[in-house]
Length: 118
Image 1 (spheres, rainbow, N blue to C red):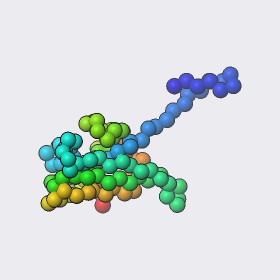
Image 2: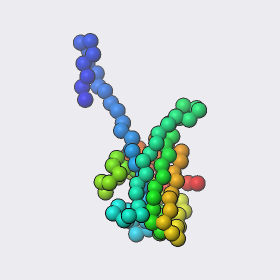
Image 3: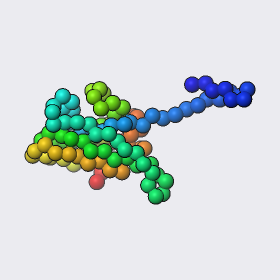
Image 4: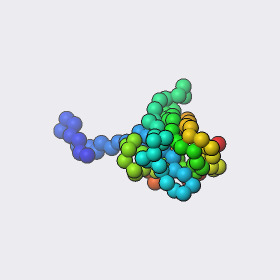
């Protein structure tokens, strides 16, 4: 994008952070069209130290969940980046996965920490 300000030229750059989080099971599937699955909207806010952190709640069916994905759309079956969980989350019945303190490093396309640690 080119910007002209007062006769000068410059380049304006920006980063669009993902707006939703989802989960992928051991089989590598995100159950997009199951009634008990829904990506969670990421709510971004600054903490008391001025660091931007996100939080989201993902509704998931029973299963073994191994990955968290970050997306720009709640319904489009594509994602920006993914992170493998250090330990799978096993749910014996439908429930929610709460994500908190999501950082910029975790959602940066092609540069995430490869494993989420607890």
